[in-house]
Image (cartoon, rainbow, N blue to C red; front, side):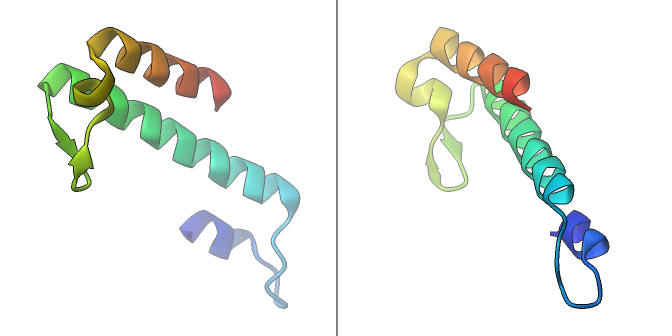
Length: 71
């Protein structure tokens, strides 16, 4: 949100490039959280079952890697 607020003009318009950059940062953050849960063997993330607990460690690593590639 901070990135989008900084990119907005006086009327509140946010350029598409800023939206793309903000989305990429969110995906990057999610990828690091998925990998962190694998490393820490965490069962819960944000009050819900973690990806690695639900699907296993190998699929979670692949999921995190995929998210890294998408951002």
